[in-house]
Image 1 (cartoon, rainbow, N blue to C red):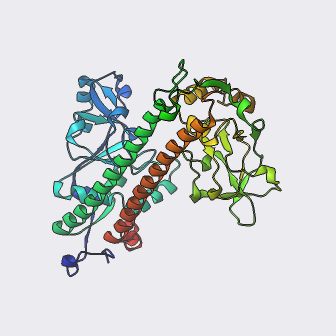
Image 2: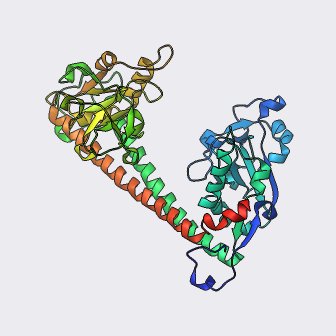
Image 3: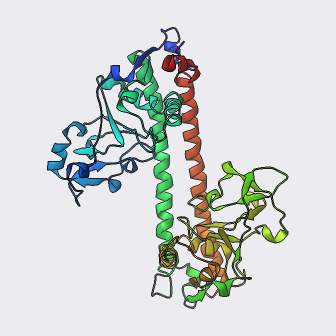
Length: 429
């Protein structure tokens, strides 16, 4: 039986949902082509050419991440020229990425990793685009991936996807409900991004620019204070930078130390609590992080990434690909250092210092040589730290609200669409 667990009151006595194949609902399912395979080159400006990486997490097109092709190339790729309300569906690499084509990106074309799904009835657009995000479709994608060496979906497989379809009034009701949540998610996302942009600007104002000795923005009580001075990081630490232990991670167990690796640190310097692991090795108190310790990634694509330990994260032993620095709190406020590690100035130093042959990396001695400009008064350091950490707390709170909305939508979709188990026999019977 194909009915959802949750149905709006006015539809509870309606018929079961009709199960059809996606190809029955479309007038076109096709995919793009790489321009170079036809002898064309990408150009600096022109007609938008969309790849998977051009599609955001929220299903919009990021115009800063599109390539460009000529009109001649676009005409040669005529079958994959996009129209408003086309659904884009990724069929290679990261499968199942979704976007709806809006008028503002046209004219546009796509590469071979994306398929165009063009519906016969545009009234079903919002419903079908949400259906593509359900567990039913994601389960089907998982089945296809499991049976192939290279993850990809053929156009035939895409057209064969089964879709459970209610009558149009119920489709519109479900789509309207989910659209309202999408609007909340979009608004909350914009709020988080605005706060992050504000912080980025504030960092540029609260730390001196290269070649300058005072910041552009200084708290009133320090405006007549002495100029900032450049120090090497090693001069401001209570001990030399230290490497973590070299041991493999094991599944998390309460009777074993919790293990912190590079991959356990998010891009914004927070610990990822959903992927805890342990280490099965004898450790001493020296191997555990202490309040105010900062660890820095020393190699690979994550080199330079930083995490400041917080007791609320629980006792942590840090891994060998991380380097611990422990600020001397009389010389360098730990939070100020952590905030400095988010500045453009720091990341330029990382890019320069890690640009060695082979694998990029920065060792303990090199981190100790990091130049950092500091106000001579520790109270000014604390004032800046307090300002920026308060903003971080606000960003974290707003991000949690965003994640709550996403979780709510995911749960609602599981209720508003038929369950995976109800459709397995239909898909593979």
